[in-house]
Length: 389
Image (cartoon, rainbow, N blue to C red; front, side, top):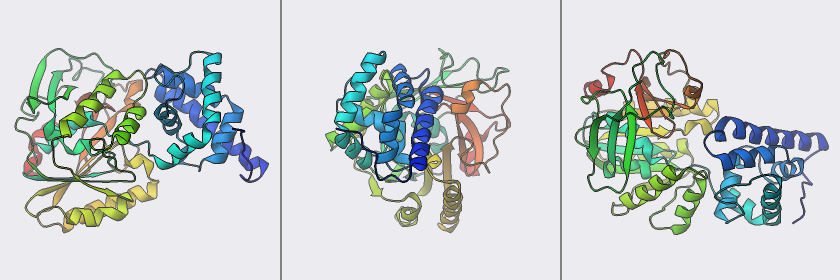
């Protein structure tokens, strides 16, 4: 296939678009992929220096979300492109990847236009569970920004909360790759679950879950909800989104799908996160505590829409008989009005961590993949006292 970037506006705007794509891939390689996936780090770095390919991406994909590196890299893996697992190794290998991608560009673009880069992170349940278990039961869970509904089943997984020896050290909150402690603080969940989630924490056993939450209703909203249990193609796409070299997350995804396979299907709605929320929230059964939650989702909305979302959630919970709760699990920059207490001696990797907040009150910092749960200074006792708040 010949590279064609015609009809994309004047030369100046086309050049600016290609430059922005190159910057995006360079940033992705340096900030996100480095240290996490050698294949994606190297591949995205090569792309950022490839003027012709950046012209193709900027000229044939809509600006914004469809130009995300995650989408292109996953689409090529999904279509069994070269180096799907290991990634390129040097200029010659990149040349083969590049030639294949351009030759199959119509297919690659079709996948990008059809799919979303959003993937569920079942391990987030390990950080949400201590709060869910202490809310008034039973619960009606509504996940905003779901992909496959895997986080709607925290009661179908097994959890091991392990001691993080440095959780209370002078460094404050630690990054996700800190050394794992070897002391078991608490164990909870379904004993026979194929998915066992391990989470490092300094929280005490009294703050960690004992009995599982009783969930009587589950629903989610997403732009492209998937059903990996019934649709092998959906599972294949989710697997393509897991970065090469991250065998643990790939194994967790497969185990989570098996864990939820026997469960009744959750109510899944396709559409805009704000537009669909009021009607779906109204379906939650009376007598159940409605919990609206989301994890690493709102960064995809412009700031104005985030503020609209916050106003909408507050209004829905105020208007529901008996009220409800809002669990947000986002980077601190996404909801800037949630002022998190500063932790001491920031570590460079703290930038990757998420702020867990209950009803707009920060409770903890968590690893981006649910691997750690660290109390914020000044929130002692928050985990154990939410049910009565």
